[in-house]
Image (cartoon, rainbow, N blue to C red; front, top):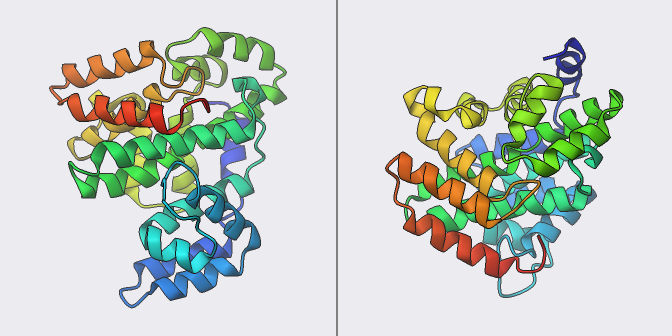
Length: 273
């Protein structure tokens, strides 16, 4: 990893006051939905983004969500915390995804699709895993923003994009250009921001789950599967789904729930990826 990249990560400003307040309320046993709603309502950009996401296929709610209090009540404090983390991170970082060949809106859309896959896959299997994975999934591609900026600074966007277009493993392209994968960059960013070690480590090991400490291994595996299945360069392609299924089989994981979740995601997001 280049010194410039390390310096860039270390110089990222702290997460905004709004997220810190939301996080403190969430961690306070006496914190309430009303407390979080009041904090969110003081940040117009956060309000707009949460309402946009709440009304997206990520949640597929029957009625339109029109207020912050309604969104917080329906989604719950943990999900609002996760969404505010993602929105705050992207607000702080300059988002130019040209080297990856997609617009920022598409990048955000794919992140939401990944989050939806985590929720659908695990909602009837293990709610604890769903809770842990949801935020990690929404955060795990954040490092691509930093890598894209580094590639642009090095005037290598065309070469980078050409290799991304043809690659099965995007992380290998990232490493060949900047010496580190976006998952590792993401982990360093969120460590810099003081996120819990478990979230940081499952993201860090998601490209190398086989060598992860046992407590992180399974979660890191699932992050990798979700990232491959809805990859930035070939989301929900037959090739990527087959690769994911093969990895799960190799690790003796049941594939039925995963494949069912993929079918639901394809239907929910039809024509948008």
